[in-house]
Image 1 (cartoon, rainbow, N blue to C red):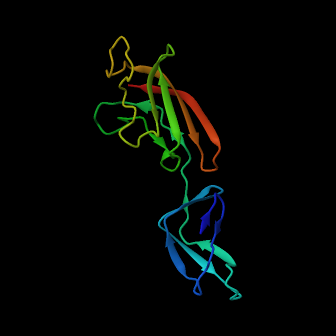
Image 2: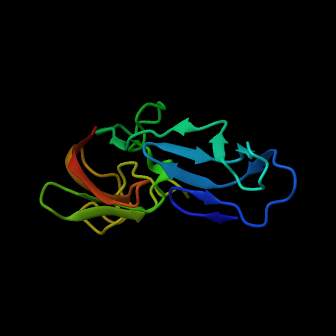
Image 3: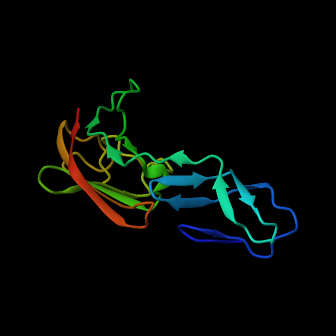
Length: 161
């Protein structure tokens, strides 16, 4: 079997074609087929060549969205910076700057191994390293590789309360 971004090619097919489970990622337009997935391979004219492949359980992808409020007060609401859609776009980087342009937070593959922004500085500031940042407006730059393999950039502001 050979997988590409838009197609599956089967080599050395056996005599029986049936529904098979696969653990793959396959991108097609705005849909992503994620595993385990059931594909049904059909050989309508019995010539041992696949006539068509049907994915039985495609899922919709969430768009990348940055929620622009962080209130790390422990109430479970907006305690960290929430960014949706990155779970299927693991190649990403995030930088957050204070209003004077100083980098206060940076990471790659956001929110995968405890690397999330909770209002704590990673850099040495007047408040010191690993200290809670003051309330105010901060600016972010998010770069990621989309499911179409296109590099995309989002930037904007967020409010730390």
